[in-house]
Image (tube, rainbow, N blue to C red; front, top):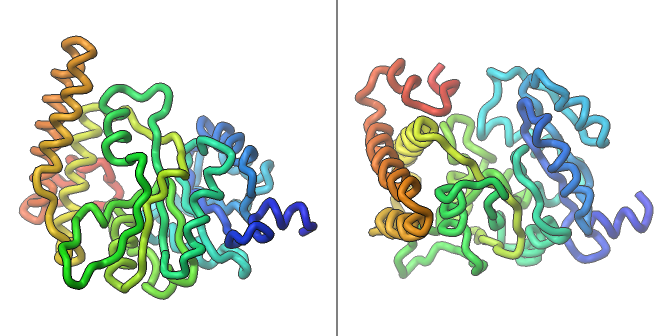
Amino acid sequence: MDQHEQDRSGRLEGLPVFSVFIPTHNAERHIDKLMATMRMQRIQPRQVIVVDSSSLDRTRELCRAAGWDVHLIKKQSFNHGGTRNLALDLSEPEVEVIIYLTQDVLLSHPDTLANLIRPFADNRIAAVYGRQLPHLDANPLAAYSRSFNYGEQSETRRIMVDGANSFHMTQASNAFSAYRRRDLRAVGGFPSDVILGEDVVMFTTLLLNGYKTRYEAGAEVNHSHNYSLKEEAGRYFDIGVFHQKNAPLFAAFARPSGNGARYAVGEMRDCLRLGLYWPLRSIVTSAVKIAFYKLGKAYNLLPRLVCRRLSMTKGYWL
């Protein structure tokens, strides 16, 4: 690696050496755009690792052509947490920080990656996630979700022994986050049996083990989903399952009070400017979320086959 490449990787700027890890499946329609935004970054990763779940399109071919390290796994062996643990072993020895991206994100500006890893100058910060902005084609519900959950103010979080710890502290993202490699190893890596929310489990576990985490608003990506009602139902069923199965992990955090109501009111306020359809869609969507979240919380009372039909993550129930 010559001096210019070292500078591009961040070493001469005092930033940690980092790799990027991307799990993929049939990502051809996304990957060219992601590659373009990766190329524009002022600093570059030491390596880009792709773990592909047996794509049937040109995903692996395109990634190899870009010089990325591609590893093939069977589709049925993909696991939200376990697959991400591969980054710990596949990253080169010099790598200090691993950035996790999903295949459908776009890095919003040339300093996105630099801004995400800059907080690791604080040795007690073990994990950082960045701000998500909606894609240009985001519908009003998807756009509001991003503005509500990813604000303009950065925040460092740590457990307070003599104070209330907000449930908000557990918020994280699996689409755009970074972890100090040694700290991730120290707490045992990602959980291998989660329906979703592996990032939330990881950030929470790090907090409970005395580390600090950070939301870095200056590190921005474009990432959003225009979910159908059926998809929202499945997603919120899965969130309910996740919260029920991981209830002990969150015992140290005060349950959110009124947060859902604030979200619904704010979303409705945004939608009222757009005619009749979107306010009605907002009401119906909110009702679906509540109903299926409660079903998910009661998953252990339901036959496994019913859970699989209700879930967005159907492979989890096999």
